[in-house]
Image (cartoon, rainbow, N blue to C red):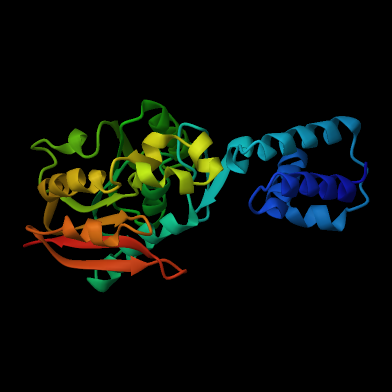
Length: 290
């Protein structure tokens, strides 16, 4: 079977199963199978695939048609220009979460501070390690810590750090939210607390994409009574570990702005909401008094 025919057939199958971004998935799976870049697919449309390649490709298509995310099939997802290993132990990094990284860098710039400063940053609920490692790539002198309640997620994050040559830059610690750093060594010592916590409420489950609901770890994205519970626990802990003038930077759900802002009362100042490229409230920042 020619490459173009296999690609067309795979795409038709995904469309019939209502797979989002079916054309992209069909291409990515064929690129993964052949270990080729996208340009190869369009410069070699007449390439004859072997029977084994055709069989393997349609097996991958069937996996994706079942709802399994492309990233879990290929084991990879790009974030901040870096290649991350992903598997069902971790949430798949989203482009919107890059706004958390951007916001930290913007806050440093707005304060007219140098990127090579010796900042201390903790990423709460690190998952694949994408936020912590993206910040490590941009802030060469920063000390980074990353917590997660899931030991399996931390194993993935540690492998990503090693693959990216940053295993000496980030310390991964198992524990719930900021509990691992609520001790005298760290209290009042951090410049930034960053997080993309779970925020999907139980009543919103029916609106969650099948790929997320059935395949990504619920502990990482939600199934909470209200959706803002984690912030209510995180912000008081953040006040304990941040320096006076330090910042909390958190991602929020599209409908969580007011609920999250209500939780930032005593102890906080300069609260801001930053939208994503679609204009949806995406990142909330707050500065600890002092």
